[in-house]
Length: 130
Image (cartoon, rainbow, N blue to C red; front, top):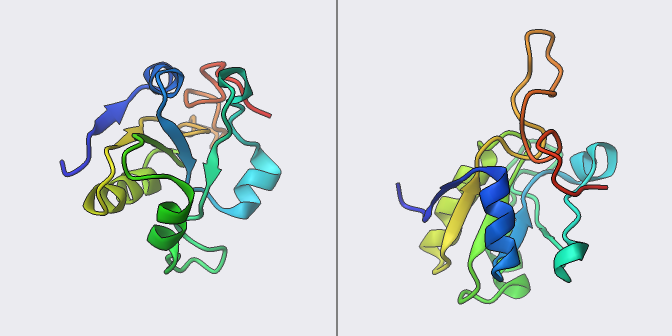
């Protein structure tokens, strides 16, 4: 593993409370239609940078946008829908000099037998979101 490790959603929240930055790498459509993490209780806001664009292509400006938004000294907690894109983003962030963690289960979690994402993830673990 070339990133700092995987965190359960509750442990990710603890890292954020200790000063890490939350990086949400989902798409603009996901942020608008599914919701976003709410870290206002920690007096911070998530950083939103798409890993993949709506076109399905990788975001060629991902690292430049990340470097402009978060200093490399600040640990990152990286979140996507289910924990897959965030692994790729954590690898890239680590290569750029960050200490980056992946959030297991992601924002929505894995689908149940009906395809509904109600099993686990940030939202289903009752972490703050809006």
